[in-house]
Image (cartoon, rainbow, N blue to C red; front, side, top):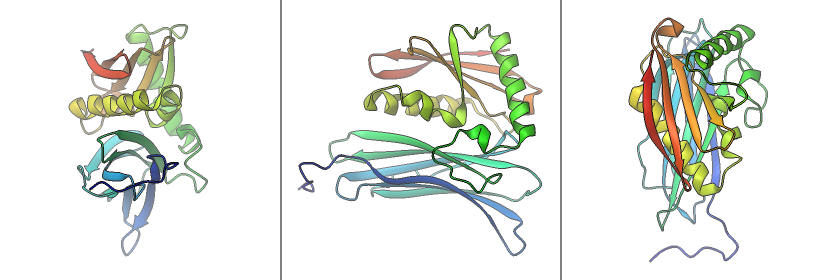
Length: 236
């Protein structure tokens, strides 16, 4: 028998967050934790997927897989403190009818301020922001994506894109972006930029490999109704 919810209750997250801390006897470790918690009455399953970057360069990730509980977490640890670290978590919950919701959160060790409502460039160092901005400008030029036709977003700030979508479309978009990244990503890739066209029906995920010295990658995402799917993958 399925749990009986209040007539006014909505299927939603009870909490979702990313938290970065120092650990170890001499704080030699940097740990990133992603926590997903659905409403205890309505959420049947949950998942957390977390990824960590050092100075804007991808290092590692962890996946809780789908957990038959409203609560799940994923944790990743690195040992090099001589850098600026940031992390992003993709959260997902399922209700008893199979409906899903997704959310993304982020954190950085640069700032002790609030993380949930700020853009990622406010949590990075000036040097890291400049490095990524230069990379994204070069990618936009190389793949001929004009500012008049495409809006650009930090990969950590894709919630600014999904805020413009319905709940179902936002869930599909988050799932598709993550799928696209996981399928092709390698250690030492730079933080991607996510571009969307003005009609909000095509997106591009762009990034450079080998800390900006390697291949340039562009992944196209296409919308059909409220669903998004991975399309062409280009490399230069």
